[in-house]
Length: 245
Image 1 (tube, rainbow, N blue to C red):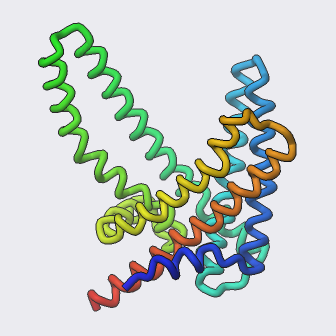
Image 2 (cartoon, rainbow, N blue to C red):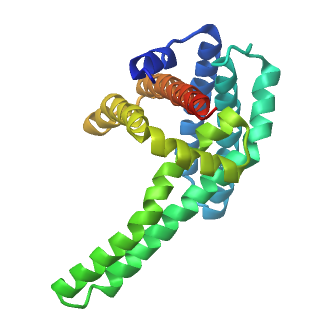
């Protein structure tokens, strides 16, 4: 039986290794936010794309190092620089392609919805409503499996599996623990919205002090909630394996 309170509690238990990863995420978050702000102020679109690509690759490298190291230290391994760099290099391409698959799928669905909106724009409301409902029913199946596959990065870092097996295992595990995944994801989303996004929009915050506070909050929740997802998978999948033995 998975104890969600214990999982989230242990996810936010900041040991010394987790604090080290927290500072990596904090520094990289602040630097990347400043870089993005600088890039979007440039007028040259070609240079913007080049810099954005460089930031994307740097973020992917650091994320692989942090998440890969987190999955190890949660299993009581000792955090070292070698572990961090090995994780960053080992998972770099697979994590990048999983994210690319997600982006392509979202772009494909958005394109289909836009086509439907254009196609139904000049016909009667009842006919348009019927067509839209049929499209939504047709899209429900792939979207459902897309949602189940979103856990694939956690599987990747936990199992060191290839892309296809990460996606397949994500779907299998998410069917078993979707309610628990949603609980953690909801708290993650609510915490970031309440403490970062809403205050920033409501008060138009942009000072250096706010940037630093924002980096702390985002980094703290990223380490805590990703640890919770990793623990959920490690405990839940081990329980499932034991039942099947």
